[in-house]
Image (cartoon, rainbow, N blue to C red; front, side, top):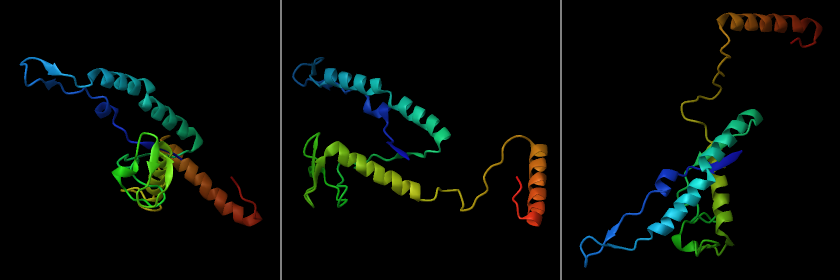
Length: 167
């Protein structure tokens, strides 16, 4: 099972709003646009969508389940006691729970929370799919499906005679 955060790169790479200078009409205050441009470039360089697309494509062949989860509060939640507190995330690298005192690297703690959320979502039945629902048949054609079901019914009827399963 592979779990991704459902990150919206479009929102993450949005431009910075200009801040007009109240003392000089037509002039603007520094707003960190150059730093934001560098961050946007590095986010877009990673190709997160392509990584997810390649993983989903490969998962079809290996039978791996790929799940996306909501990333809200995963970096502020303690993976031991599940308390959400903004103050627990001391810095970019340090996570120290204000409730139980658990200390861990912040990214590792967030990754454990994402994995836990993915496991919880995988365990829940999907909406709109009832338990024991029939799998869709191959789209070969009705005649091929009739021939396949007829062959299966004769194989199961004849297999009881000798006790040997027939395929």
